[in-house]
Image (cartoon, rainbow, N blue to C red; front, side, top):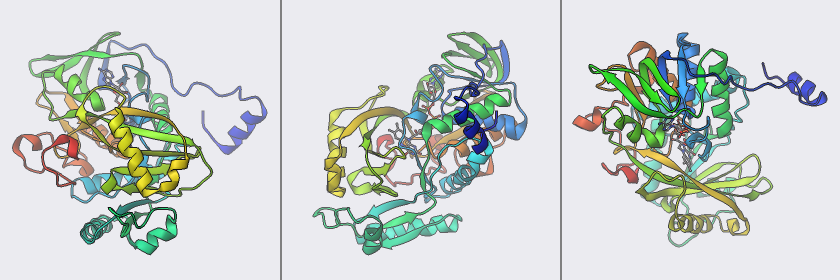
Length: 417
Ligand SMILES: Cc1cc2nc3c(=O)[nH]c(=O)nc-3n(C[C@H](O)[C@H](O)[C@H](O)COP(=O)(O)OP(=O)(O)OC[C@H]3O[C@@H](n4cnc5c(N)ncnc54)[C@H](O)[C@@H]3O)c2cc1C
């Protein structure tokens, strides 16, 4: 089934009776070449690129709940390539390029909207850091512009420029940054993978990882044992728990991140805006809701909900930046489990167990990484060599300290990145 304007018109005129399910619902087979644990954005994108780029179709994605029920359907949808450090910079640059062709590649409307991202700064020192980051982005081949206070005011006239604590000095503008519809990204990759022969198996929780003689041989699941030559753990906030099934202890802490959305409003906010000093960021969804969030809840947890002190802080920061937000009613809030590494950068690597691979540690920035991570992990699974864009995401950097990528400069503390 291909989507096209003509098809939408025809279905609209004939009662929308011609649409079928977007993916098959197969029973698990006894064995696969590759099993991917986790049907979030990263697992589904990996399956898609395995089939599309490497012709590997004897692949299953095992998801304990429903596809897209994890963080891929819970995030605030920001897509950007504004990283500073080598290692991260080329990876997110590659991922953004994949985003830019994704709708055509998937034949699916993921509503990728390059509406521009503005990171505000509030001091001379912060301006210098923003200029340095912008130069690194330009060197990487991405876009960046340094806006002064009046430049920001032209785009965002309703911010409070003279708040006593953090007066706005300017912003780093990344025009190719923006948002995408998160659920559609999961559905688009799922449909693309399923069409190419990958089995997507929902309500299938992995409960054990089978290892014999240092080599992975399969997994135990709530739907029976499944043998596999290769197994990839792609379970975001649950990565530590799933890796423990193979006797591994990961350098990851799981923390909660909350987000909030208001009632639908007329278009008011064209860009994505971040207010780092206040731990606040905001954009407006295509439905009109103001979507915003802040920092982690700051205590490790596997609960997909947060607590009131963080909610209160986020509201205060929102009011400080954009007082008019006080007139909007918050409709709902939710939380997701973040897989936080000590340096804030992810892991895409083999493990010491033959045939067992890891893709995790995305912290609160893994949505924009979905295509890039899927592409890189598929390459690693297919060739046993890291993809050029992801050579820095080694697991052993946490063992020997060589090649740590600490964008924030906050040191080895998971929840500060
Ligand atoms: C509130 C919030 C805001 C965010 N905002 C942004 C943002 O603006 N931009 C950005 O880039 N990133 C953002 N993120 C981060 C981003 O959502 C995550 O980094 C990314 O989605 C994680 O990868 P995933 O999609 O594969 O995870 P998930 O969707 O969580 O996928 C993992 C899957 O593994 C499954 N699983 C776990 N254990 C098992 C098991 N034993 N057996 C089988 N399946 C299992 C889970 O059910 C889940 O579906 C945000 C996250 C949150 C919570």
